[in-house]
Amino acid sequence: MKRLRSLNILLFCAFLICAAAAGCLFPVDSFGAVVRNTTFTSTADMMQKLGTTDPGVWNPSYLTEVENTYWTFAPANKLGAKDITLDMAKNNYRNLEMLLDNGYTMDYNTLSAYCDEYLGKKNGEPDSFYTIMHSCLGNPYLTGRPAATVTATTYNGRDYSKVFDAAYYLSAHPELSSIGNNPPELLRHFVETGIANGYAGNAAFNVKEYAAGIDAAVLNTELTSAPYMALGPGKSAPLGKYSYSWANYYGKYLEHYNAGALTLPTAKQDTAAAETGDIDEMMADGAEDNSVAIPKTVASAYTENSLRSVYTNESVTGAQANLRPLAVMMPTDKAAQPSFGISYADILYEIMEEGGISRQMAIIPNWTGLSRIGNLRSCRLYYIYAAKEWDPILIHFGGVAYMKGVINGADMNNISGTYEYGVGGKAPGAGYFFRSNDRKAPHNAYISASGVQKACIQQGYSTALRSGFYNPKHFNFAAGVNDLSGAPGVKTATSIDLSDIYPYSKSSFTYNASQGVYYKNIHGGAQTDAVNGKQISFANVIIQNTKWSQLDKKGYLGFTMIDTTEDGYYFTKGKGIHITWKKTGDYSPTRYYDDAGNEIQLNTGKTYIGIAQKGRTPKFG
Image (cartoon, rainbow, N blue to C red):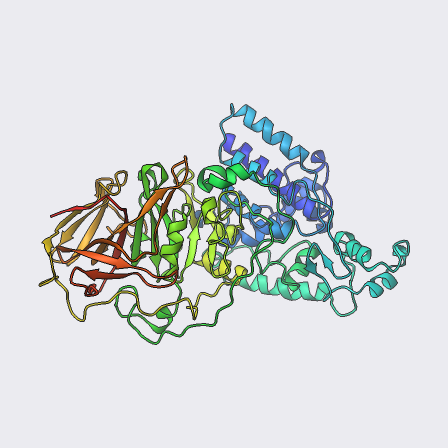
C-alpha cells in the first residue's frame, strides 16, 4: 500500500509539472492523480475517469516525456505493464528542460507543503520518493525565476529570429495593438502566450507542419526499438509524439536543447559549502545548474591507422581504434561491489581520497555494447589529470569544488549525473543516468552506452579521437614477452599486497603463472564484474609513488600528477622492479623507466595503475 501511495503521489507531482508546462494548472479535485500515458492507460480508462474522449481535455494530464522516454528507460520486466516506476519518473524529471521551457511558471506551494507533510509522516527519514520530490522542488526552473530578459530577437538569451518577425506578429494579431510597435514586448507575448496558443511568429515557419515530421520520426524510432519489438504479437502501438507543447517543437527547431543546460541566471550558491562539498553526500541526483555554459573546444578528428590498441597492444578494428574511451569513476566501497563493466577497463587507476578510502577510474575503450556501466561516483581533481592523457569522455556523478576551472574547461568533455563540482558547475547529460532498485543510494547510479551516446549528441561531444588531444604513443610495449630477465634489481612478485597503500579496499594481486596475468582482489576476495561474473586481471601492475597533501580540514587530498622526480614499481610475469616515472603535461603520456634509465617494456594486455601516497609502499614476494 505504501508503494502504491508513493506512486500515486509521484504521478500527481508529474501531472502538476506537465500541467504547468502546458500553461494551465487544473484544481486537484478536478483530476486527482489521473495521468494519461498510453503504456498503461487506455482510451476507455480516460473516458471513465474524465467523462470524455476529447484529447483536448486530456492534454493537461499527459505525461509526455515519460511516454517518449518509456522505451529507453523502462526495465525489461516493466514493458507493457500498467504502472509507472520511480525510475521512469526520475528520468522524466531530468528532462524538465523540455517540459518547462522559457515563459512557463509554476505555483509549487502545493507540492512543497505535501513534501514537508510526507517527510513528517516518515518521522524525518527521507526515502527515494522524498529525495526526488525535494530535488524537483529545488530546481531553479521552479523556484525564484526572475522576469525574462527580452530583446527584439532574444528571450533569456535564446534567439527566436528564425521564427519571429515583430511586424508580422502585430499585423496578424490586432488585439495586440496596445503593445504597439515594440518588438521586445511582442516577442515576450509570443514566447509566453502566443506559442502555447499555436500562433505563428512569422510567415516562413509553420510549427504544425514541422511537428508532424518530428512526430513521424519519433513514431518510427519507437516502432523499431528493441524494447518495443520485444513485446511480441498483439502489442499496442506506441504514442509516437514528441511533445504536447508547441514550445518544445520550437525549441527543437531552434536547437535550444542541443547545448545542454539553459543560460538562465545562476542561483545564489552557498560559498562555504561549495568550497568543500562532496556531491555524493550533498546533492540529489539529476540536478541542473543554469549558469552560462563555457564553450567547448571543437577539435578536428584524429585518424588512427594502427590496428594495435594503444591501451593493450592487442589487435582492434579501425572503428575501435578511433573511438574515444570512457573514463568512469567507480567506487571501492564494499557495499558497492561488484561493479558493472569494470572488466572492460583496459586501464584501471586506484587512488586514495578523503575518509581513508580509495576510488577507481576505469579507462574503457570498448564501451558501445554495455547496457549498464557503474555504479558511478564523484570525481576528484587528480583523476582528471590522470584521465586527460587518454582524451576520454569522463563519466562521473559530481565532484568537489577543487575541480572548478578544470572540469568545466573548454577542452574537457564530461558527463555528470549532477553538478560537476561541489554545488556548482553544469550537469552535462544528467538526464541519461539512472538508478537501480537492487542497491541503496549512493551505490546505485548507472549509465548505459546508449545514454553516453545520446549525452554526447546533446552536449556536442565527439566520440571520435580528437586531434591535438589524443596521443598515439603511451606505453612502450615489448615486441614479444618481457619476463624482466636481466632488469636491474628484479625480484619475485607472485603476490602483491597494497593494504598499506589502500587500507580500506586492501587491494591485492595474485599471479596466475599458467595465464601470465595478475588477478585482482578487493576486501579479501576476488574483485569481479557484475556483467559477466569474471574476476578482473592484468598483465601489468604499476605502483606510482606520488607527492600528496591534505587540502583542508575535511581531509580532501591533492596529488602531484605532473612530475619528473618520483619513483614506483613495475610488476609483470610474477616479477617486479623499481622504476621512476615522469609526466610533463596534461595530455602527455606518463613514461616509466627502470633504474638503468631505460623505458620499461610492458607486456601486451591490461594495466593496473595504483597511485600511491609517497611514503606508502607495496609488499610483494
